Image (tube, rainbow, N blue to C red; front, side):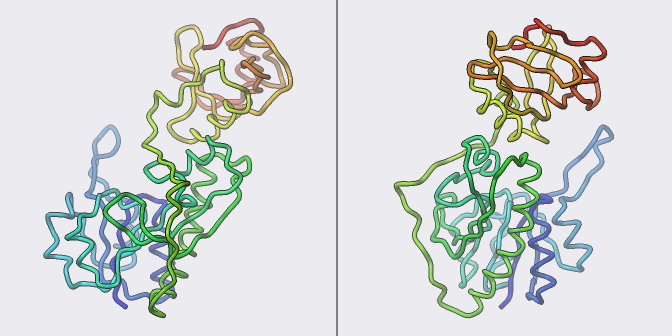
Length: 303
């Protein structure tokens, strides 16, 4: 069975490598075009393109795949996608007689859309996972081939993303086995349980101390390592990397204490104990060191 793999970020690399290692016949890799990176704007390939070149696989980095249907038509029996980053038209889907199959980082039908991992953390989900589903025109709406689950726990976005990336690699190889066997059993998504999530902006990473300590700690985890949760201190942003729920109380946003334990800030319900942060113009540091440097003190107000 001939395959085209489509993906772009680091998240998709393990799936590509796992399929290649399994002996899958990958005839081409689709990815996003090279982009300028850094201050010097050096044109840089996507992680998937770099991996494909390393594996000796042909790569197409079309800016708009819908304009290159003739070039992919007839190349492969199926396409497997993972965080590709482009909407697929009916003409593209019709290029693959065995269908297009997507590796999506949520337990569909929950969290269809662009930020499923962060959304699962924000919602306080106990479990999330990888869903392999058949791609249809409506985003993340197709019938489900298989699901692999993992616990969310106290993981940050970065930690959970890495775990799901590895899980996607396992799911890709398993899914291909089912597809090769022919006539796979598919499960329709439960329309009553659909939820959607959009791309998260920096503005949504702003901490609101009028929320509960539990909600704020989830926000901090969901925004680490990007875009990073933050609050304001004396008109300057204070980026918060990690915190835990602390049993204390005070006026929302008030610093209850700042010492060797960290920085404790009151919320509407309870408080959070900040353990790691990045001050404006500064570097990553322990909150206790920030307090030791007298950059924050009891009674200060964060908003």
